[in-house]
Image (cartoon, rainbow, N blue to C red; front, top):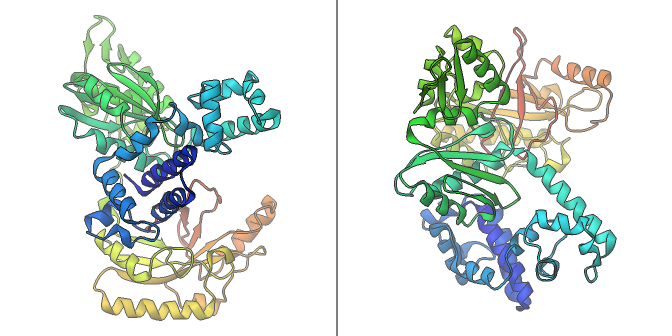
Length: 500
């Protein structure tokens, strides 16, 4: 379990203890532990593996340390399950809605029979929540707005938030006997920047048993659908996760069907129809004879259509099928190909770890180099560096480079582009750095012409190498779209994960 999941359990315990009327010291102890664990710089499971005494974490005493170990090692906490059994179903789900505290959740559950967010919305629309003691129309309307905002937020979430959830669920399911081919599908497998509902599928000797394990996972808050081969659950935060158990011999066609974008699958079906074939999640049907050819692998599926295998990341309906017809699908860059990271922040500005910590983390990844590019002073909220601190950091990087064989640490800065296009640090200091990343962080309301001239002026500075997050989109913490600025060739872009 990740830190956020452990913290959520302890916060739920605090809320339930408040409902029971327990003393405030006990309630605050769980609240304090939840905050401490959520903000740890390292995952709690790694801390346990390293043999660190959990009581050394501020806010974690002996009893909570034992409960943390039980939760991480088993995925469940007996004390939490017993506590939840003392209250009506759905209490924890209602507490996920901003504005609903423990007492309000209990009233909604006991007096209105509300057990889910959908039922809460229905009760609000029917006027039952407004009539509830101490609620009123204004409070009911506020709750409705919170539900709508929560749903909008949950419709698409950054992939960086979705991946840990999926990894936790799949890790919990993998020990199931006879389970094979467990794979995430949909936009997450295509590695889109944001994802909606999560699709997971696999094959199993006892699919119903896997489904039963799935709906009983500690992350599960609601079970809207449960069958023998498919189940849909709602996990913390309102995200829906669907699990499908399919036949071994048609796994490839089913995985392809639930992975490709809508347009990719439409284009494939049109191609298949021209070949006298009908494509479905169950396989490929020969129209003349009605014979269904089942496809155990995706490779077999694409080969049957006379196509080079198309990696999931390219299945977006953007001429990838034409490329596959000609055998022109390129080999995609993989993690093993990455040799370094040229945009790394540290605790010198808004990062959480030291330069040396980042270098050691890069070494563990097999990187040959990293560039330390903390914020400049203009980014006040990030505690950026002025000229004096930049020179001090250059000296510190030199010291660490002399003590480490690999990776090599390049000096750098993420310098702020001011409203007029000038840079936040003078050329004299920028020219001493190995890499300079320029970025807009303020005056976002400028019109198109002025913003364009602002950025162009910054890029004309001979010291600037990279333009960071040019669209200024916020897809979630730690996500940046970086443009590599080349003076002699066209621009290239790539989504680059940050080491921090």
